[in-house]
Length: 282
Length: 314
Image (cartoon, rainbow over all chains, first blue to last red; front, side):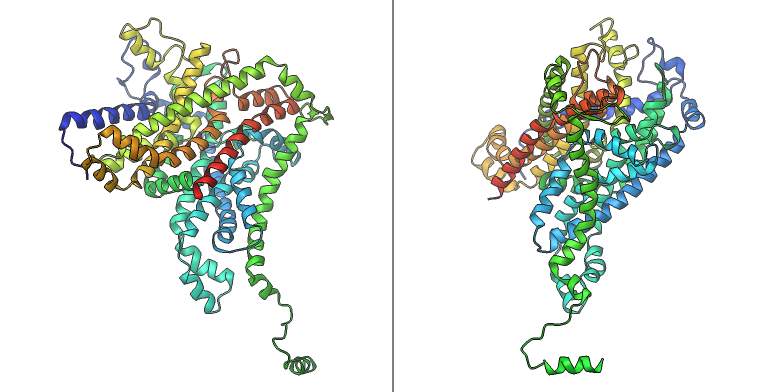
């Protein structure tokens, strides 16, 4: 390590001052969500009192959110859609990544180029034709519409991430299994895939957070209350006319952030590893 | 059965008889197995990415109100866009938004990465918490920003008024210039942790011995950054920037939630304008044409990225 000659003053300037700035900048909106969600309306809409502090905390916004709106339905929909589309994406991701990472076959270069290209196609390029296709298939206002379309965003990403992981696994175990007479499918399922659990965890968390985050397709395909996801429900139904129910909105935002934050806190190391391999190697 | 085995026996003198075709053995061949695996997901992507893409090009050549059959009109949609002042404003907005937000994210992200790369207490927890803006659903955190920037009850303005800097406080989302500024700040807020964590990973691959050697040779902090950190970090910065540019360029959520493109189209981006025209205005063809016009600048960027990665490999 480099020997630091200067004392705490240099450290304060190089570390604590910028760190403090970034902490406030990055985290203030979350503090603000939490504070707003427990303020009574009299404090929310007063310009006199200090806004950073809650004087009379209340849970009325949470109670109203859960009893007057369909927030729980939206949460259920969001979870269902995220879990199913993540599962589909992992399966398809493996089907693409395993051959590309472990085998040689004609056309492999073309396929991996196509995956990279698909990954980079931005959503706004496709939503208009997709809206028409979904309508013609009669899938408007069904969760199937988003369960089908989310994997188009997640599969290329999962395949890319898993490919990077698969390439890092040594070949010996698979070779041994093949020599012992295992078929390719057996080798893949019994020997190879169990070795790759960390790769699945990072790809899975990523896909899950992306699916929870998705807004555009959900906004277009889901126009009825009972099929909406949390982001669309919050925007479309907690803003009634020009009236904003800020307390409820903030309660919804905070509750909507919590599942992702919890999952992420368990797997933060995997997440960071996945993020960096996705960002750097991709 | 026995006749068959006799026939086989009679030919066994030939060197290596070709075995009867076996489906199992056929699927064990590397190329066949690979393609059998790849085809289902590939078909899925062709059906829901490839086909919509081509269909979008077709739509852009049609005059097509919602739920009615389209009429082929050639390039008329694109021609009317060229004469549409709003379209040019949208293009300009998108470039201003993308470039400013990317530069801010790059500088801020590098700063945060350098800060987090030092040793301090609770380092792991602080690193994890710093990523929050990037992982929580964008729409939900943007709702919080909407309240922070509220015209009447903005917490920022409360302090500005309190400290006598402005009275009344500015209308963060109501004034065209300020609205764009606010959007850029919120986008920076959301994307900065991604930059920081990726660059941090890049920083950690740099061998500390390089810094030690440079320090012994008398290099200043700045010189160490300029001649060691910067060149070694360049490839990572480049790739993250390309990703960030692509996703900022095609951003939708932030603008839709905060301003819906207003005031007076000052914050419309390609994606939100296409949405307005197609979904609210019901003109699918024209909307598809707007969305498609994102492609040339983006294709250039992607080509640049591919070219760069290839030249890095060799």
